[in-house]
Length: 370
Image 1 (cartoon, rainbow, N blue to C red):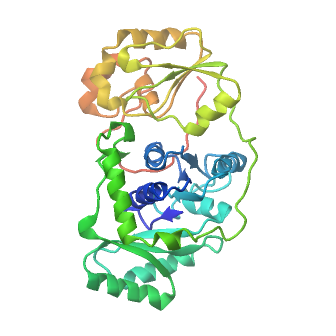
Image 2: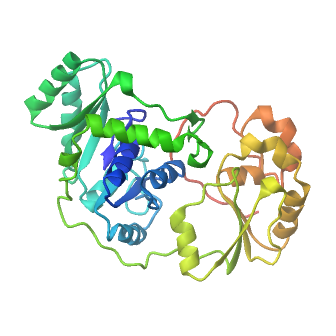
Image 3: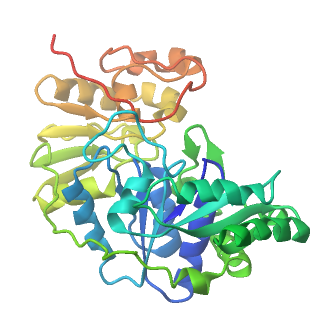
C-alpha cells in the first residue's frame, strides 16, 4: 500500500508511476483505491490497464471488500493507494472500521510504504515515520519514499535518520523533477479529460525507474496470508432495468457497483443529460451518479428534454441522485452558477454550498419521512 502522513505528499504520483513502470516491465498489476474516491481509480486503470476497485471499511461490508480482492487473482503484484493520511477516518465506526486506509492494510496484511514530503526537514522525517510504525500493531510500515528532496546533501541527512531507526528507504524523488497532475476543486481533473495523460504516465514511470528501488519494492509481500473472499458480496440492483446518466458531467459511478448490478442480471440503460437525453421511461429506476455537473450548469439548465424526463419519471418511480447527481435534483454548489442553473432543478431539497469547502471527509445523514 502506498500511503502518506498527509494529503498532498505525492502518493498518487508515486502510485501512478509504479503502476505504469510495472506494466512497461510486462507485469500484471491489480490496483485498488482505499476510500470513496471516484477519480484516482480511473487514473489507475489508464496506467496499468486493469480496473481499479474501491475498498472502504466504513461504507462497505467486510464481505464486499473480500469479494473485490478476488480481482487480484492472476496478477503479479497488488498495489493499493491509500486515502488522505494513513490513519485518518471518522469519529464513529461504520461497517467494520472507521474508514481509515490502515483498516484495509490490517485486513489484507499488505505492507505500507509511506511517501513523505521532506521539504523543510531531514532527520526529523524519521521520527515521524517511527511514530507511524508504532501506532497500530496490525499495520506494518515497511519503509518510506522520500519526496521533494532538495539536494544530495538533503537526501543524505534524511537517510541518516532512517538508518538510525532501522527503516528502509525505497527511493528519493528530487524536488525539481516532481510532475504535477492537473487539479480542480475536490481533486484531480478526470482521467478522460486529460489529453496529455499517456505522456504524463510515461514521465511518471520514468521518474519511478530513475529514483525508486523497484526491485526491492517487488519483494514486499503481505505479512500474513492475503485474504481470499468469495464472489458473494454483491449489491442488489435498484431494479431490473436501470437508466444511468453517463457523460462528462456524470461520470462518478463505482465500478464494483455496476459490476454487481450486471452480475445480478440487471440491464444498464445509459443516457446523456448533456446531449439532452432523458431516461428510458420503461426503466425501473434512474441513477444520477456524481461528477462535475456544476461545470456544466448553464448547459444542463437548457436541456428541457432531460429535465422533463426526470420529472416525469420521478412521478412514478425512484430517482437516485448521488453526489453531483443529487445536486442536480436540488440546488447547485456555487452561487455564481445559481442564476444559470436555478431552472434546472427537478425538485428543491435546498442543498447548497456557500463559498469554498469548510471541511472534507465522510459525513453521515438520515432520511426524514414527511
